[in-house]
Length: 338
Image (cartoon, rainbow, N blue to C red; front, side, top):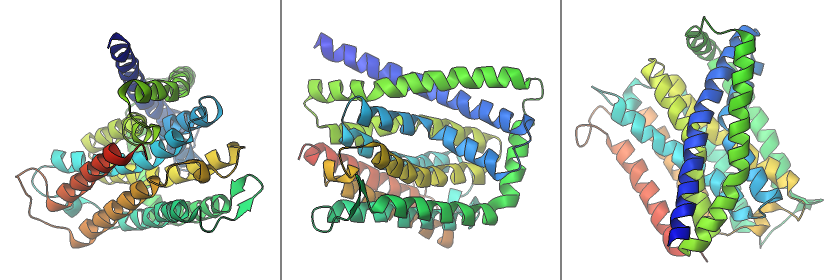
């Protein structure tokens, strides 16, 4: 029992470090982008998107190359997609007066739609991996398809959202007029090192947690690791909301889901044993399907723009998202070891 408490303590420490360092990482990335003249360009946006997903990226690489637990690598990414959509429930609770989806711009339908396609494509490949598998060397044929479609999606979103993204980045970076570029670089590097070190160690803690609790790596990766690596998205989204940038908070979450699928393609490239999906549990298809349905619910909310709220604080869209999250958790708890 003492060993279990020690592992839970290590797990909690990892969560705290990634949550704090990941949030600071995003902050200093904004400052660097502004002071180097990148804030209004596509380069600056890519820098920020990469930084917010650094915990997922580092944890996945460590899970595959050092810990050799592919179920944690894939589960943390798909689980993070679900967790990001649950953060919308938190934002809906924080919005007062009317529904989140009534205030949000309908333009988010585009990124949510791309998310449905990319996540659904991964789920389809998980289901078909034993029935129709086409490989290129050690990677699956799905990897170049994901990379190509991600580039198309980012180009379309950038053209569609250029004006508002530029306005938001300028608003964020204006909050830090007293920090020099040298200070920003130094603190950015320090925060990145903390995230990298914690991300490398996290899969090992997850494996120990699975062993001591009698759980499967699929369950731990999809629920616990995914929750930890999504903490920066949670903090950044709440910070954006408090600044009055609700649309950027939503865009951050839906955009992170797209980048998570790109990370899965990158992990497939570095995993030399063969196509990554063939070494993981077919239960990941359920996570992908849950994320697709949740993204569809978000699209319905953005189109329908409901004005009524249930239980005073949240609407039926958020209630549906949270219910699906609980269902996904329950299914993985029951069948995560199969």
